[in-house]
Amino acid sequence: MVVLGAGPAGLVLGNILVDHGIDCVVLERAERTHVETRARAGFLAANTVRILKQHGLAEGLDRRGQIHSTCEFRTEDGRFRLDYSGLGQGERHTVYPQQDLVTDLLTRYLERGGQIRFGTEAVAVRDADTDRPEVDVREADRRPGLWRARYVAGCDGRHGAARRSLPAGTVRHHRDHGVTWLGLLAEAPPSLDAVGYAVHERGFAGHMARTSEVTRYYLQCERGTPAGAWSEERIWDELDLRMRAREYGPLRRGRVVQRSVVDLESDVLEPLRHGALFLVGDAAGLISPSAAKGANLAVLEAAVLARALIDDLTAGDPKGLDAYSARCLTHIWRAQEFSHWMIGLLHGPSGADGESLFHNSLRRSRLTSLRTSRSQQDWFAEHYVGV
Image 1: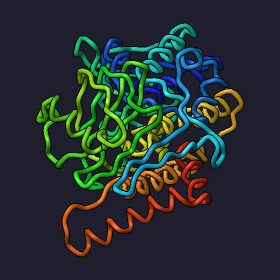
Image 2: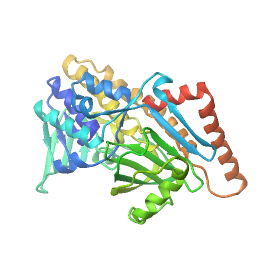
Image 3: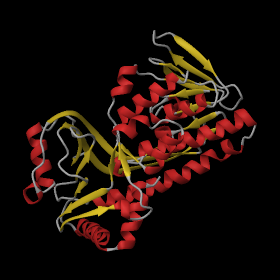
């Protein structure tokens, strides 16, 4: 088995396969230090935690993960909080930085005897319609190389070799939501004991704790804004304004150590299987960060594919592989629908024209329903934590 990419999807898949005695190699174009330090998501759904525990991959998050179960919304009509652990299915998030999870997964994979080749870039997947597909690679020394396996798992993201190698006829569903966030990682303790969503006429602002000393913030900005365009003073002043710090208490400031610009997009491919090639994680479907679903979908898909591969390779049962695409797409589209709903909840069009006023009135009505309706709160909780 060849796995492309050493993110959560690739490493969960590799761990489960190696633990069941299936030979597996992970090809990762970056070096190990980069893989273990790149900061991404941090909110793990209850189902993700169950999968990690089931396969002996939860030691780190059991020790250092933080339970989160509350959202706070700040709007022009005031603020309200939802303890979603008491709503819907009664589930919670575990906050655990993705770089820590990846480090744990990589360590466990190597302890189990798994192979990984850092600095090895997959260039193309060939002959996926046969029982002996090939992966052309560029080795760490820049020389060309070749890997052969019974199956290939493309866990290498939206720009990886797996997507570039898909046959004609693959259907791509794409939507640009027209919203851009400035993503910030600050060396500052959390200012709320909840996930904070602020809706403001100047744009959305978000607060998500990562650790006791590090907080993730988001600020809506104009499309095309460079990551370094805003000074730290402007960032904190804008966060104070949009999160209404004057009304609800000051934010705890600190040095901004990481910046990125995120254009909110959705991107799904169908099908997710092409002969011996399977798409997993961001290679299968990109989702906006508005509802923290990306890493959770990746782990779910990896676990589904691992079980199907084990059944096929050890028992000669291909039914799971045949059903992989349809099963995972059900989860992907469910997550996309909720993410789309969240984008509409948190962002409104600017301007004073009739259409903008109409859409902003709808947004305020959605927030009112979320504040006052138990059935709406149960729906939100189930979809917010579920995948």
